[in-house]
Length: 244
Image (tube, rainbow, N blue to C red; front, side, top):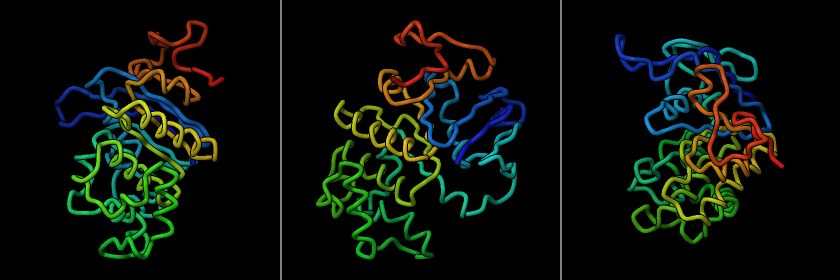
């Protein structure tokens, strides 16, 4: 499932400055695209728009070449094709649910259930846990009983539960240890290689350079020019870093 943003702008109030100004971005199917920029530059806003959680003030979104309505209800069948991996797992996960119930939520919504029932999806949850490098024994624990890395792995499993065609990841490894960071980036890369479109905003340029097909700097997307990213190989364009 490809994603295209055309001349997307956004402000949070009518007379407020624009957080985003005429951004053009393409995330083709089967690719992992990195997004970098300083804190407060608008990366989270852009990812919220890309994941259909926020309607842009101006501009157009297309998924698989089809326009997404700028206003109005987005079909549930379309939302279910999008997986979201957040920056802060503690603020995203419901502290009253076990990790298994958290991962089962998308499956329950798909099946029209009011509450997630981990027992009903035991096999699926165990497979998701293995893909996310999460010990299945932790599925019975609540967020307060696991580490940040373990909780983020559970949220990765949740994001993958419906086999999404688009994965939108907002600083998914912030404050995590190197081992967990490598595991999460590896899974995201594998999903892209299997055909998903993956968009990752991160300050971890080394991991982006290793796992992404291209890296874009947000300011360059808004100005439609190229930017220089310190630390990337000098022979590679900063917004078109090819994997080797």
